Length: 220
Image (cartoon, rainbow, N blue to C red; front, side, top):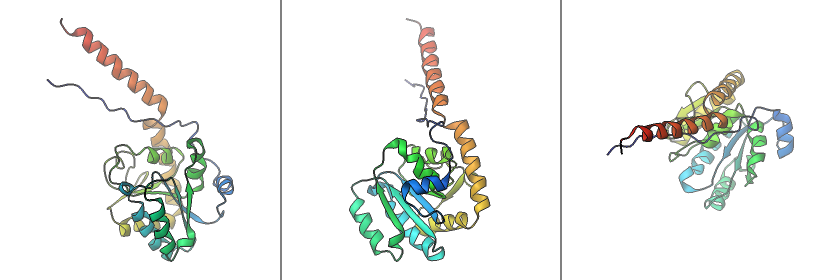
């Protein structure tokens, strides 16, 4: 027997997660106003491949001394990742902000220039959708969950799953402010079309209505 399956992603509150003043956000987080800020938000666990982000950042910082990496989250790999960061030549430019209340994450997104993500095991890239809602372009590996949110060359860059490719994508965006701005604006537009929580509620209700209608047409 075959059953119909409908997939409705978790929505994002676009009234809260929205573009804002980067300088104000950086002041709130204690970040320099003129740095080029890369942001990661998520669990610091092995499957998230955050170590790959750190390795990529070393390449980025070697090319762009103003680059800074901010990591938000906690997990089983937290201490190992802190040790890895301290061993980097640019380790002093890596900041671990720990776990933050979900409602305060908007300041992190607003403070950043590029969102960077290396996980290949996503079922849904919710943090990518939140970043897009805040008008933040992303550089992420091409894989399930990620390529369902990021449109390559339009709202961000999809790369091969290796540090060199991630670094190349990040450097290209950091060197081109006009392209970052254009991608960020498009990311927000796509978020309004695809990730709005109100839209997902409507889609969920439509699924239930369709299921109820099908059940009503079945013969006893």
